[in-house]
Length: 154
Image (cartoon, rainbow, N blue to C red):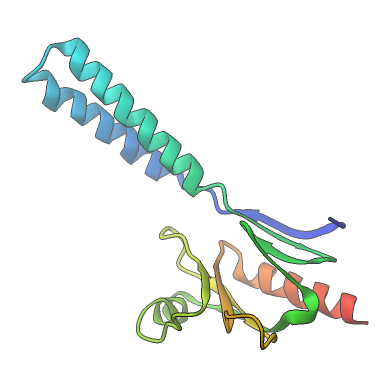
């Protein structure tokens, strides 16, 4: 991998973690009414661990833009196949995730992110007409993609 022009990790927000801990705590209180407190504590601890692992895995997706191409999680594409890039607001992102969605599109979406970037794919052999990528910084990501693509093309 060359020099990274843009990097973002789609981390799970803190309030999701708070909800997970709250869920485990209320589980302890509810189970404590019916079972021995150690059983309730064990079940609550297990649920907090399972929720924590799920949130950690869900928030580990990374976006990289470098001289070789665009990489989003396990997906990657070289610059020669990247077409037009659009920064999307929350309304347009919602439309592309709903009524205007393309079933063949590659979508990397996180429910806590309302904005995205649309990357058109210029490869007839690729089954995905575009990539829809959730991001906290759509303008910076779109600019980095356009800049890296232009730099490599010249």
